[in-house]
Length: 309
Image 1: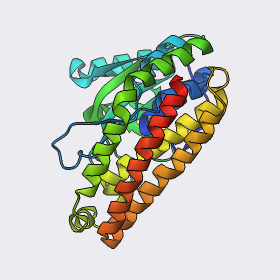
Image 2: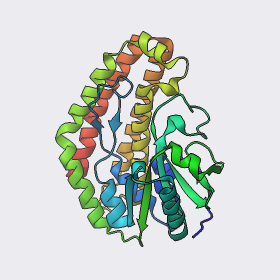
Image 3: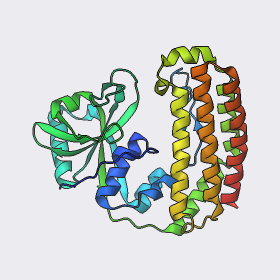
Image 4: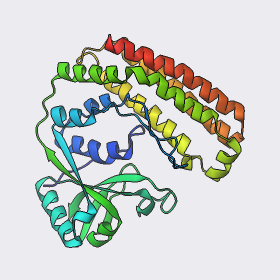
């Protein structure tokens, strides 16, 4: 099976959204916006790793339900250790022939087409294989660039951490049920939302801007704090866009999307303040970012109340 894929970079998608879900939805004609109704969560990860201390999950915990129950996309992950190189090649050829797509995961540090940060930043990354033969395969990765990447099967096997196998059927979207699932999961998060964001604000205000400036070494994109806030901002934008498309169908009030749009601007402001704090080594910018997050905590709780009522 072979698809003609139009590669495009979406500014608000992470690598899994861009290189896995988006490509599947393009090839199999799925309504991807349904998937982003998962993007209004906030869960601060507990981590002792200084490079990972700012990590936040924006998942509401319903991505699997949205993908499997409505878009009819089931994704199974298998670690590389389960396969020899020959077994990997056989599986790759089988999936490309039957599905036309084969997902891979790796550390971006070892990704050869990661032109800007190869050998610089460790981060989980996903790409998609669209063609393969016994010796070579073609990988697409619009998150990094829009060029097709040709790599030997052996080289690919050496750098991956795991593979993603897809089972895809015709989508069946029950909008009323989607709305019920969204409300239920937000209701589960309601009591902790403000508390989680406040903890994040306190973490930010406790940082030493001098040390943060030194750690980025002139490249703000290597900052774990900036990456995290940027990811939250983009997730909120994705959620807003999905509500614009499907809000009425799933039974949400029309003004919810407008409230989310204002919220996106607030998250973008926090990002800008943190960037200024690091580049200019100004504690007051970091304090302003923290104060803005207290306001965001209130606004997100208000929005959840509006949705759940």
